[in-house]
Image (cartoon, rainbow, N blue to C red; front, top):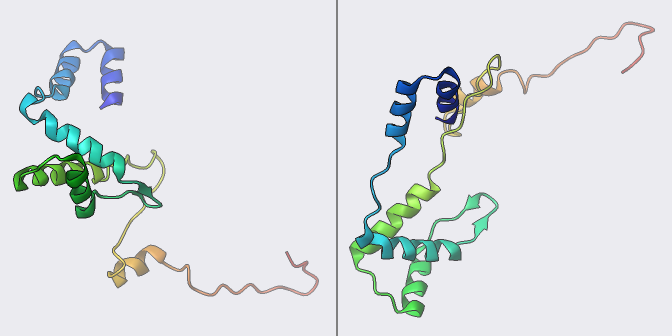
Length: 137
């Protein structure tokens, strides 16, 4: 989106800039739900990142938070907090490979044919024949 906006600015395309700005507009944050956002942020601070990145807010975190803070959450409020955490933990879309480079392919570990296709001939034994008098490298 940023690159598209920069290109439109460089070209002076006001109509494209207006479209981009319209796409970026967000609805106003509902003041009635601000307390749930604050609750989520307080819980998120307590969930440390592991080796694989941020960890989800667990039930034990929510339980400890409600007991120690005195905040009582209804089941639907806990659902909203969990939904916010799922959105936070969702992987961001990754940009494609630079032009001129092949895209990397992925396969689930349970997909034997896909894994073999990706690995190709990596596991094949390579045999090098040397002729007499050739230096070893």
